[in-house]
Image 1 (tube, protein in one colour):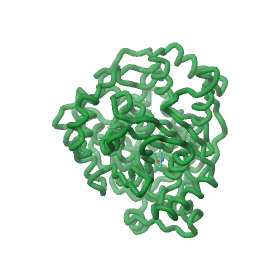
Image 2 (image 1 turned 90 degrees about the vertical axis):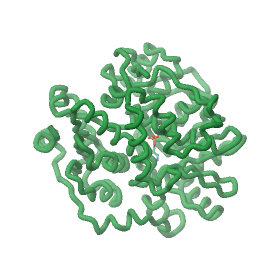
Image 3 (image 1 turned 180 degrees about the horizontal axis):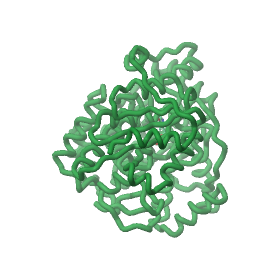
Image 4 (image 1 turned 120 degrees about the horizontal axis):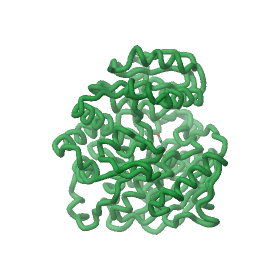
Length: 454
Ligand SMILES: *Cc1c(COP(=O)(O)O)cnc(C)c1O
């Protein structure tokens, strides 16, 4: 399988290159040149375990990775989950929830990042290379990325976060990891400062090459690819087409659902839920993509105003017309808005809804009272969005985090922080380790110089 850039400015690359490069050199994102069909094999896929199904799907895309290595990588990655199903489907009356939070950091990002860390290690070893991952996080992504590469051979990871501004649990999930290849950089500044430093360092091409810098952000194709698996796995459990409701920030998770549809999975429709940061809800209702000001909400992993993976959707929507895509993206970069179509809904298979804080809290409460089931505030956004729409057939809501990760939201909704998880209890007893650095590019770079894997 070859991968093309959405911006059309580079030669197609193979899977390993798309994996290691992350973003194409022309500024675009990688997509496969075609989407293999599953429909004719549908019945034979029904009996497979999650890991076996993952092997079927991933080997269609990662064609240049050795089959035995792939099997081992996938089974090791999913063995870190505390549920044999990996993605557990829970049905209580008319509530259908796909639990994606059974991995090490209790959020859906583990599904892809547990695989990604092992893929990186394998491919780097094959080519005798090393990589130093540099990232900035306001919470969830950092811990899932660290969990994916801790102790992996030939990989260092350096995660910057705004000191004192992430939640206590989020910080502990990063800083209590013992492995020597993990570096938590507590920056004396805001998340924006962390992102600015990240950009400045990555823009120094000479340093980036010399230090073998890499990223694990949500635009890496391999993350999108792995996420396709749970949509297929869940749709196989029904004998009629299903609708998925997906709480969305960077448009990564829901993009995988769109690609599952392209591969022939019987998915009727998609419901997209945003919090008050509703750039996507507005875009799908009107065709106008307009940047707003980021607001802090109860669902911090969706407090995003620019959805980096939307570029892939627009490319598909424009039937691969890179010229038009570039116009759209440049227009947005320059004017903070761009329009895809004059008016009306962009895509009738996607129903996008904005759910505010009050409704999120009310949904956590109602879901608990009616079904005896606790959802986290991100999941609640998807559950609330599903309740606003009328759907034929089953609607499966994606549970993207364990409710125990967000005790204060649960407390606000039902008067006590009911949700518990043993992983989180033991964090307090562990030794935490972080390096405090000023919000200064040179200081971060000095630290990297001394600690990167060479
Ligand atoms: C990252 C995240 C999301 C948003 O996923 P996207 O792929 O960015 O749309 C939703 N919920 C949780 C808990 C997350 O960590």
